[in-house]
Every structure is written in structure tokens, then in C-alpha cells.
Image (cartoon, rainbow, N blue to C red):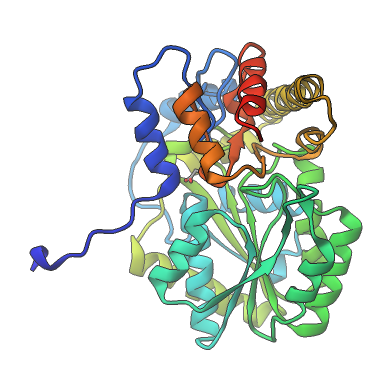
Length: 393
Ligand code: LMR
């Protein structure tokens, strides 16, 4: 039987991790996978996470199963972090295996509710969105998003395409820090998106994997909160991997805002069912770290301030890179790097140019020219800037 398996296409981002590891050149630079690294190149454990783990270790007296939907403390704390004052009578939620698990369960939930749906997804988007939908056999169409000339959002085209989503379709949106482009909507533009969805009855699925990495925890959640206030139904897949730095703990949450409390109860039951069919109980350790931090004022303040340092560090690197490139190229065509937000920017280079960066300068970025700003430091920014200009980008 197993001999009949067909080889699966490897994930492009994860393949790059392996390629980078195997490169023996001194001074190689990894701008691939979306993992934060400090100036020393380390992905640190945040101070509040360490303290929370110690407290959990001291206080925990059992490892018996939690609830199928995860612990209420985690789900309530996350609802508060993402939605602010959440309308709890309409909110169903589910602890998931990371943000990816939340995306997957969101799509499963949507398909249970409407087997005939089409998913509308930004061009480009996180490649695994497409891969998951292909694997599930879910029909999807892309809406135009990135303008390769301005490296900003082609908002008119986006609106035109999103208008085509019908009632009960899903429109997959990046709540902040668009992955892979780094180009984001203004709040006024989000208002227009809300109006389009309100009119059509298409349901937004908001992927919120980088809250706190763009303009701050609350600002990054503003679009999600806006849609949650304006629309009867909203799905939100939030990840704790990046903003708590607990990547390997696989901590995420799916929130489903329903039209009324009866639909909320139906959704809650379906969510628990989906976890049971997939892996039974969701992982608890990461979720417990998160709820320990978010429900303790001291830990929360310390965590939020460390996250702010991370965010501001990335903004400084963005400014530095844009300014080096201005000097070296004698033009302002790379200024978009300072305007983009989140971990990533899409340079708009050709696959050949991206390859040249790898071959000539040992600089690794995803083939679509997405670079991870958090993979840089003060000393590697000038190296990258020089290589970009040398590659003719
Ligand atoms: C990324 O986009 O690099 C991250 O979300 C990591 C991943 O799983 O792809």
C-alpha cells in the first residue's frame, strides 16, 4: 500500500530552512522562515514565558485531559486580547494546534456550515493557506492584493474582486502584518471592506498570526475588532507562536462570532466536534502559559513591554535598510520597506534575482522575494543592501 504513495511537494518555506542549514558558508544570512531572531541570531524565550512556566510547574497537580475546546481561561483571555470587550453571547471559541490548526478548523467549520462555499484568498498569501485548501479539496479563487509597482496594496482591484464573493463564501484576510508582502490596509480601507462584506453576506476569516508585530497589540487588532463589530459572522484564527515566542508549543485559537446565541451554541458544539475528530484535546502547555501571562498584571506588563521592544527593533531595521538602499541605489524605490509592517516585506524581485542573492551572497529569502526583517541585525543590513543592489533588484 505505502509503495503507492505519491511524493508530496515539500513546503517551500520549510525547505529553505533545510537548505540554509546545509550551507557551510561563513556569514550566511537567513531571511526565510517567519521566526523572530534577536540581534545575536537567537529566538529567545520571553521573560514572562519563563516565569509562567515556572509557576505552572509549581502549581500544576495533574495532567488529566482538559476540555475538548481547551481551557476557558485561555479562550477568554485571548478573546479579550484580540477583540477587546468581546460580545461573549455571540462568541464560540476553540483552542487549536497553533495558528495553522485554527485556520484548518475554521475552513472545516465553514465547510460544515456551507458545503458549497468558495474561499477568496489574497494574491499572494501564505503558501500553506493554498496548500491546505488544495488538500481539503476546497474551491478557492484569488483576489488581487499586491501592486508590484508600488509594493503597496492595489486597493481598487482588491475591492473589485472581493465584491465577487457571495453569501456564505469565505474571504480570507490577514488581520495585520500581511504575509508575505508586509503591505497592509488602512483602517479607512478596512471600513470599505466591512461595507462590501456587510452587503454580500460573505464571511471573513481573519488570519491573525502577528498581532503585536506591526503597530502595537491594539492597533494590530483594530481591523479585526472593526469587522467583529460591523458583521454578523466573523471567523478569527489567531496564533500565539510569534507574539509569545512559543512556536513549538503549538498554541492557537479559533474564534467564531455568530449571529445570535443559538448559532453560537451550534458553532461551539461543532468546534468541539472538529477537535475530537482531528486530535481530540488541544495541547495545553502553551495555552496555559498564555493565560497565566494575560491574567497576571505584572507578567502581562512585562510581556507586552518585551514584545514592544521586539516590534520597535524591527522598525529600526526597516528604517536602516530603506536608508542604506536609498544611498546605494540613489533612489527612493525601496522606501516601501520602511512603510511595510510586520515580520515580512516582499521586495518584488524576480526568482532569478532571489536565486542570485542565495548563490552569490548566501542570503536566503523565500522565492517570491519575501524577506524576514527579524532575520537581520545592524551589521547584516548593509550586507543585504549591497547584495540587493548588486543583484540588480
Ligand atoms: C512563515 O510564514 O514563515 C511562518 O508562518 C512559518 C510557517 O509555518 O510557514
